[in-house]
Amino acid sequence: MITLKPLTETDLPFLLEVRNDDSTRSMLENNKVFNIEQCLVWFNKLQPKWYIIKTNNQPVGYIRTNKDEVGCDIHPNFRRKGYARMAYKIYLKDKDYASLWVFEDNFAKKLYKDLGFIETNEVKFIRNKKYLKMNFSQKTTPIVNYIVSLYGGERRFYKTTPLKFFIKKHISFIKTKPYGIKYVTFVFNESNHPNESQIKENLKYEFKEIETLFPDIKCTLLSKKNQNFSYGAWDYALHHFIKNDEITHHFLIEDDYIPTLSDFIIPFLEKDKENPSYVASLWTASDPSQPPHASISNGLLNHEKIKKTFKKYNKIFNLFFDPDKLHGKETYDDGGFRNQIHFLKHLQELFGEGTDITDHYNTWFAVQNPNQIIIYGSPFNKTLIAPIFENQKPLFNSRLKFLML
Image 1 (cartoon, rainbow, N blue to C red):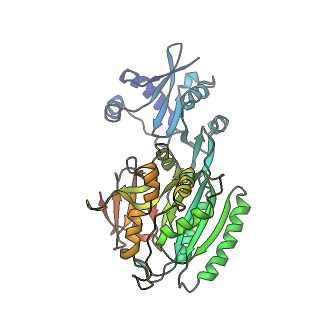
Image 2: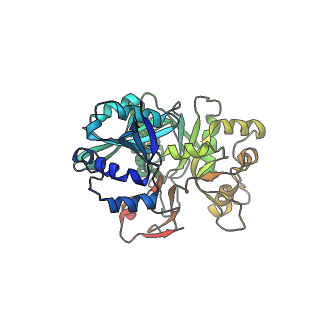
Image 3: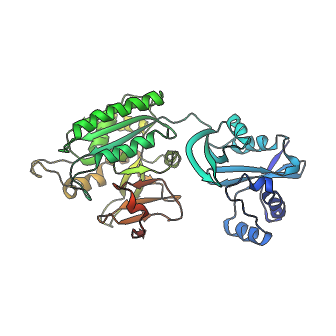
C-alpha cells in the first residue's frame, strides 16, 4: 500500500538523491545535476505541487507535476515493485486530463499505455533521441469539429491571398492527428482568386487521403457567398452540422492561424467546463467604449449551446451585412469589426460572458506591419495558436518586433 504526500522542504534531500542518480537523469529532458542550494531556491520560488510516494512511511519516489503534465521517479532501491503504477493510479484517479513525455526507448512506455496514455505525434529530439508526448483522458474523448474559414481575395498583407499555402499548413496539422478532432470542415467564402476552383478540387483529394489514413476523421468541403467574413463562414458550417449530435464541440479558426501543439484543444476544453458562452483565443475590449468580446475570435464552441441558441432564436450568430449601404462591397471597418463585437450576442444572452486562455497561455496577433506581433498574456507561457506568414520567416526573423500586452 502506498500514499502520496505533498512535497515539503524536508523531503528535498531525498528528492535530490533520486533526481541526481544517473539512471534517473538519463530518462529526463533536463539531465543536469542539482545541489541542495539550487533545489531550495526552486522550491521556495515555485512552491511545486509535487508528491512524495511512501510505503509504510518509507519514501520510495516522487510524482512531478507541471499544470497538466505529470512524471514519476522511483529510487533505484525500490524499482520493479509496482510503486510507479500504483502512484500514477492514485494521482490520475480524479484527473480529467494529463500528459507526459517519455523517451522512445524507455521501457516505461508500456506502463503508460497500460494506464491509458495515448501516444501523440508531438515529438522532440533530446540528446539525439526521440522524446514523445503521451496524453491521458479519464472521460470519453471529445469529438471536435475543426472549422477553417477560407478566403482567397485581397486582405491585409496580401493583394492575393496565398490560399494554397494556408491550406497546406492546415492539412499538415490535421495529418498529425490532433487530440479530439474527428471532423474537419473547410468553408470557402468565394472570391476572385484565379485558382480557387482548382484549389477546391485538389482539396477533395487531400480530404480523401486524410480519411484513408485516419478512418475516424470525416472531412467536409463547403462553399458560400462572400459575406460576413470568417463569422459568416463559421455560421454556415455550424448550421450544416446543427443536427449532428455526435459532435461535442466546434473549434473555429481562420485560415491564416494554425495550432502549434497536437493537444492544443485541451486548455480550451478545460475552460469550457466553466460554462462560458465561448472560449476565445482572446476575450477583451480594444477600448473602453466597446463591450468585452472575442477580439481574437479563434476559439471553442460547445455543440449543445449552439443547438439551444438555434432553438430560441432560429439562428446561431448575430451577423450584420447591408449590401445597399456598402454598395455591394463589405469592408472590415464597415462589417467585420461590428460582427467581431456582436456575433456571439445570442449565445451571451443565454450563457453569459465568454472567456479566453490567456491566464495560462499566450495569444499572438499580427498587426498591419507583418514584422510585428502583439503577444497577449505572458510571453513565458506556451503559445497554442499562431499567425501564419507565407514563408514563415518573419516568425523567426531577428527583426520581428514583439509588443507584449
